[in-house]
Amino acid sequence: MNILIIQENGRHKANRHLRECHSMKRAFNSHNVDCDVWGLGHENYEEAPDFESYDLIINLENYDEAGWVPDLSEIRTPVKFLWVIDAHFRGMGPYLREYVRGEYDLILQATKDFLGKNSIWLPNAYDDDYVKPDGGEKLYDVGFCGNILNRGGLLNLIDAEFGVKKDIFVIGEDMVKAINSYKVHVNANISCDFNYRNLETIGCGTILAAHDSTEQYELLGFKDGENCILFKTMEEFKEKVRKVLADDSYRTKMSKEAKKLAKKHTYKVRAKTIIEEWKTLKKEQL
Image (cartoon, rainbow, N blue to C red):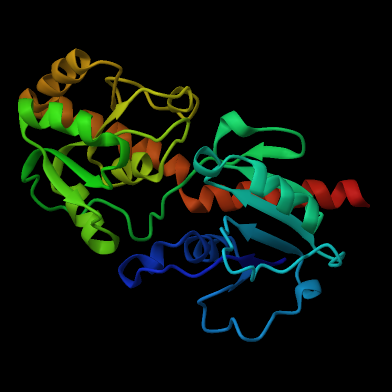
């Protein structure tokens, strides 16, 4: 089996190795599946690939402001998947138009709320080749690594109570170091999204304290008080975080459970799901 992933290369050098296409290439390779990556910003972009030489083509979350993504409607030989990640931000309109234009076979939908015809839920994942516990000291009780966006009010409330180590737009290896330096990492999704930082946090073995805004937490195995902290109100947050910070053995146990859960949500696990979906579609086409 050989796969082509079409995705624009990462725009930030420090974080490029964690771009979905590169993480998925490594994940497919771990299953002894050949995988190429092509798209705007990659070294091979100027020479278009032989699309029909692949068994599967994956169009992976391209905003495509420049109109570079090829129309795959005339490509008949491979199975074609459209991978949707940012529907919570963009809506499904752009994706559905691309799905029709390219005559794709299946939508891989990262957000459960947007599941529809000819789509499966493929939740976000994290790259366990790079995102992992580093064995360093937990220097800060509570931290936040990411972009402020809709989280400013929440962070201000938490900061007033606990103090928050804020690492704003810290990416790549520095992001992993930052998350590893917290005892508790605060996260809040945008809209109905289930963002990467949930998984990167537990992948580092740091305690995730997440605003319980979506059923996806429960469906993906997150259990409040066992492998994470889930809260709906500030009073809940304060009570649960104080308990975790006051009891090292409890925090250690929760961290171990978090790392167990993380193993179920790596890119390698998602790659296996994609391979199985491809096999199913191939059988149906026979």
